[in-house]
Image (tube, rainbow, N blue to C red):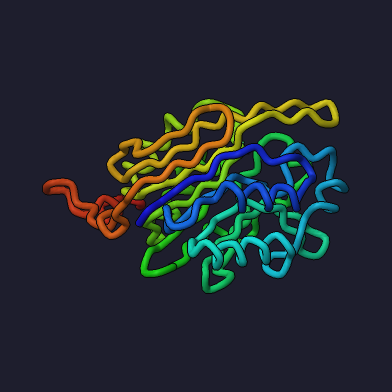
Length: 261
Ligand code: ACM
């Protein structure tokens, strides 16, 4: 599997321009699964919940999911992209998985970060794993990484590759992902955005440095902190299922959850 991250800096509120930027920057024929940043069509620093509601869309069916599905068909790739989701009177920080065959599924961010807690509803559906072309793809979004339970839950649900759309503003995630991947024996693609946003008295500088991490904890590809970047690495999802370490059996079935309370 050729696993890739597309790092760029969305323009706040310019959904059509951001979709066009994704289309322009996405190479054809170089990857099988491409992860895009969190909230990659809207930007991140919403002034308030009303502004978020005005930019959020239904999943599936909303124009951004439709456009990304068309793009996946055009470029013959599977895409995982962070979007603001409107569902009735609730709004989620979500990610969609779409492929040449259409919409695959979505995930609603469970661990909201900082002021996201004031404007989004927390994810209500648990961690999601989807099978596409024989590969089991799990999704978590940005700050979910801070909770080891996120990737552990995905691994226990069979994830081989974790798509990790992000808008990181702190510096720890990239250093932590090798351990997250090693302890769960999964491959991860952390697609972070770059650039800055200054809105409603709030300043965010996003830390870029998108990273593809192997199940042995190795950093397979990484991007610079600033600017646009395209990183890609060949990975072997089936090997992530071989989780024995010497005489220790499968590291996941070797757990002793009865002692973890
Ligand atoms: C984050 O969860 N966007 C830091």
